[in-house]
Length: 141
Image 1 (cartoon, rainbow, N blue to C red):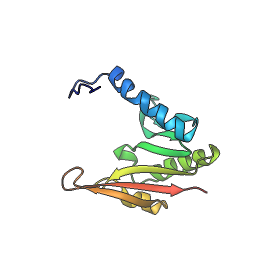
Image 2 (tube, rainbow, N blue to C red):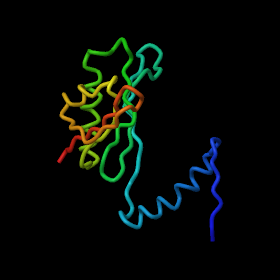
Image 3 (tube, helix red, strand yellow):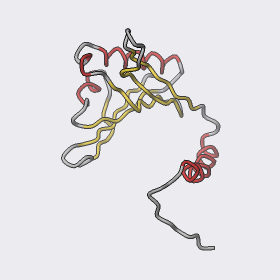
């Protein structure tokens, strides 16, 4: 049987889930059940309690993936990012993670992550054009 193929720029969440379902089943057959959870370390404005930055990540396959790290401009270079990453590292250890991984752009913070003991395990040139996307990891065990 030949399947019909369609290119769409209007993919729904239901379409995404339909694509993901067999992939999850395949992965499960090779890895067994692995817990997956999201975690946030929120930075709040003390006056309004509004979230103004922080860290958002996902724990799966024994690793913490830092998907987002955002520090308000007024709080940069004051150690806030380092405190967020140290808290994430403590949390990852408590959760029994093997390590932490993340990606960043050349115009963002590769030097910051190197300073925290992360090692680069890959990069992509011209993503976006004229820049690089860097991939870092830090093993905790």
